[in-house]
Amino acid sequence: MATTMHLCGVKTPHSAFSRRLQCELIPPPKPLYFALSVASVSGLCPRTLENSWRGSVLRVNCEGRSVDVIEKNKMENKNCDGLSNELTCVMKFGGSSVASADRMREVADLILRFPEERPVIVLSAMGKTTNKLLLAGEKSVSCGISNVSDIDELSFVKELHLRTADELDVDRSTVSRHLEELEQLLKGIAQVKELTLRTKDYLVSFGECLSTRIFAAYLNKTGVKARQYDAFEIGFITTDDFTNADILEATYPAVAKRLQGDWTSDPAIPIVTGFLGKGWRSCAVTTLGRGGSDLTATTIGKALGLREIQVWKDVDGVLTCDPNIYPDAEPVPYLTFDEAAELAYFGAQVLHPQSMRPAREGDIPVRVKNSYNPTAPGTLITRTRDMSEAVLTSIVLKRNVTMLDITSTRMLGQFGFLAKVFSIFEDLGISVDVVATSEVSISLTLDPSKLWSRELIQQASELDHVAEELEKIAVVNLLQNRSIISLIGNVQRSSLILEKAFCVLRTNGINVQMISQGASKVNISLIVHDSEAEQCVRALHSAFFVSGIAELDGECGSQNGCASMLPN
Ligand SMILES: Nc1ncnc2c1ncn2[C@@H]1O[C@H](COP(=O)(O)OP(=O)(O)O)[C@@H](O)[C@H]1O
Ligand SMILES: N[C@@H](CC(=O)OP(=O)(O)O)C(=O)O
Image (cartoon, rainbow, N blue to C red; front, side):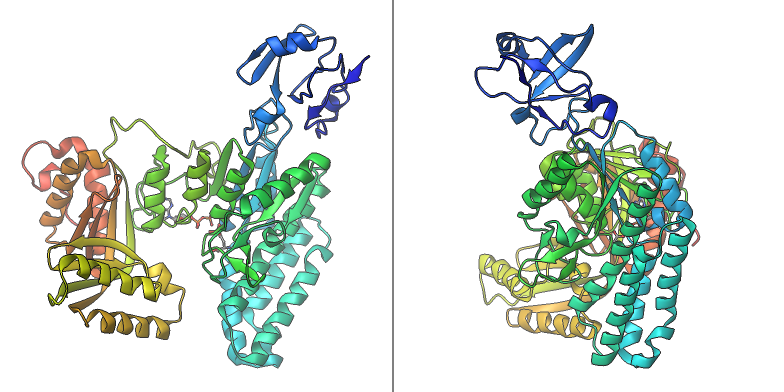
C-alpha cells in the first residue's frame, strides 16, 4: 500500500517546492517524520532509509540530485539551512535603522536580499520615539488635560507615524487607533498628575507597537507576507520590575510555540515588537531596560534554536571604543559571548547589558551589522574564538558611578564583615559592579543602572540609607562622580595590558583609585574620576589601537606608545 510521507514544514511559502512535496512511500515500520528541503523522494524502501542514516542526516540520491533528509525529532531547535522550511534567523533593527519611511524601505530591501533566510524580524521604536514619549509623559503630569494635545512631543510622534504611513502608502488606520489611545493615556496622566513606572512602560510601548504595525503593513503591501506581533501577547513573560524587567524562563517555550506554530500553519514573516514584555503578576506591559530590543532578539533566537541572531545598528559592528569618545574607533571582527557581555554590562551602549545571556545559553552566534552599510563584515560573537593573537579588544567607559570605601571598625571578624556588607546591599536591592578587598576594608562601586531606574530623590535617600546601615559596622567614605574604564581583552596577557595602561596613565598624571582584575577572564577595570575619564580613554585607545601593542617593547615613555592626553 502506498502512503504519503509526513514532512515537517511542508507548508513552504515557496509554492514551486510545495507542489513537489507529496511523495509515495511504503509505510515505514515505525512512524518516521522527515524534513525535506528541495525535492520529493519516491520509491524508497523503509529499510533503505533506516540503514542509511549518518548521524541524524540521511543523504539520498533523488532524480539525479543529492538530497538531505533529516529526522524531525533530531531537528528540534536545530535549523540546518536548506534542510527544512523552519525559521532560520532573527534580524533586529534598532531605532536608527527604522527612523523614517526611507529607512523602512531600505530595511525591507535588506531583508529580501537574503532569500535563503526565513527570518523573525524584531523592531525598535522609530528613531527617538521612546525619548519623545517619555518627555510627553513628564509634561502631561503638570500641563493640565486641556493642554495635552499641544505637547510638542505628542505632535512629533503623531506626525512622524502618519507621515511614514503616507510615504509608504500604508493605510493610516494601521496606526490611527494607537495614536488616539496614546493621546487618551497622556490625558489620563494629566488628570492624575502622576507618571508611575508602570504607566511609563505602557506609554513607551506605543513606540514599538506603532513601528512594527507600519512595517508589517508595508511588507504585505509589497507582496511579502508578514504578521505583526506584540511581544506581550505572545509569551514574553517578565518580572514586574517596571522599566527594567527580566525575562522569565517560561518565555522560551511560550514564544517558540506561538511563532513556530503560526509559521507552520500559515507562513508569514513575523514582525515582533522589541523591548516589551508582560509582568507575570501584574499582567501589565513591562519594558526590558533601554536598548532592550537586543534582548528580545536573543530571547527569540534561543527560544526557536535559530541558526543566527543579527542585530542591525548604525555602526559597523562593535567598535574598539565608543565612537562618540573616539570617532576613529575601528570595528572588532570577533568577540566571545563573555567579552561582549562584559563590554555591554560595563557601558558599551551598542548592546543591551543582558542581551548575551540567551545567546550564550543557546550557543547561537550573534552578528552585529550596520544597516547603513550592509556590506561591512560587522562583528561576529560566538562562544569561543582564537585568542592567540588577542591582547586588547575594546575600551569601555561607564560614567557617573558611585564608589564606596568601607573600613571595618573591627566589631566583626573578616568573614562576618564581608557577609554583613553584602547582606546590606542585598536587603536594599542594590547591585555592586566592581569590588576590591583587603583584610579590614572593602572598596566597591554601585551599579548605576539599578539606581538610575529610580527617582533622583529616591536615589539620594537610598545612598544615605546604605551609608547609615554600613556605618553600624564600618567607617564609610562615599565617593561620587567616578568612572569605570574597562579594558576588555585577553586577561592571560594582563601584564602586557597593565604595563601599557599604567604607562599611559602615569604619562598623563592620572591616579587610578581602584583596580579590579581576575574575577572576569576578559576584563580589567580601573576606577578614575569622571572629570579625567574621557581623556583617559582617548589616550588609552590611541596607545593600544593607534600606536599598537608592539611598541610596548622598551622603556615606558611617550615615544613608546604611552600617548599623552588628546585634546577634547
Ligand atoms: N563600543 C561601541 N561600539 C559600537 N557602538 C558604540 C560603542 N559604544 C557606544 N556605541 C554607540 O552605540 C550606538 C548603537 O547602539 P544603539 O543606539 O542602541 O543602536 P540601535 O538603536 O540601532 O539599536 C552607536 O551609534 C554608538 O554611538
Ligand atoms: N526603543 C527602546 C528599545 C530599543 O532597544 O531601542 P534601540 O534598539 O533603538 O536601542 C529604547 O529606545 O530604548
